[in-house]
Length: 200
Length: 200
Image (cartoon, rainbow over all chains, first blue to last red; front, side, top):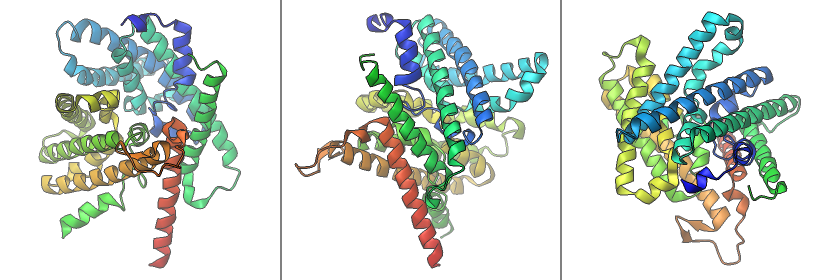
């Protein structure tokens, strides 16, 4: 508790977005990263949607966990509540966009059901509770993680556009070459951490 | 005989990770040590088997429109039970796996089996199918974990197996190593499949 309170917010944001990136360091949300990244525009939109949903659900889950479950000693039901809240938030967001911003819904709507089963969303909410972050810290952590995921899926999609023009080993397939791209980008991201002094 | 074929289908021709590309997150995240991978595979297996049998037994009572929600609730219930048992019996392993135990909920291997098989078959068949898929998943997890632990530490399940002159290659302990090992294995599996296909 003491240590988590002392982390500067900027460090937290940078750590979550780059050096301990949610996709490349914790391996969360890999399935959509592999399948969606074939299309750059779709990747960009999906990443933006993940950012938005991640911020809302992490805040909602933090409030429920710290002000409902902990006082009632029901922490073992955490998982059930988190999954229900994420499903409910996504459903509400979908209806809200459909009702008030139909043009936005047309572009982003198809990604919302996919986000319900994105393990990055659930994982970030659970990390925030596990590390006993305060509400502000949780929000910064969620924003950093969301931006980090967005960044990674856009980079991978951009690289794949170039890869499409080249000849790759037949047996590697689309999944394999995307994994190798992710490996190289993960190396680059850990390189940035070293560049900043590695002490973050 | 028929049950044997169902079992074989899940193990090799329908292998959840390499052929169907499901459940990639945990495949990459928990394969640092063989011990962790083993416990993860067992827990995913138990979850798949129990939720498959429950869904198969209730298949006439689950309304089609709300089937995904019902599956989700069944999976969450099983995962909470498994997590509590793990915490009670093996607290060290539970701490090492951290939030990845809870993330079995969003592991698409489980949901995939429920939707594709258990929802339309008898409980006995669903049990065998889930067992086969669980064994296929465990095989992949243990293979990746063995390679990573051997190359990265020179150990297997914590025991020193590499000769003294072997210098551990630390990159396999880091996240990029996971992507590289996965891509290499995927290449090997696809190559073997193509090789076997040409023979017959």
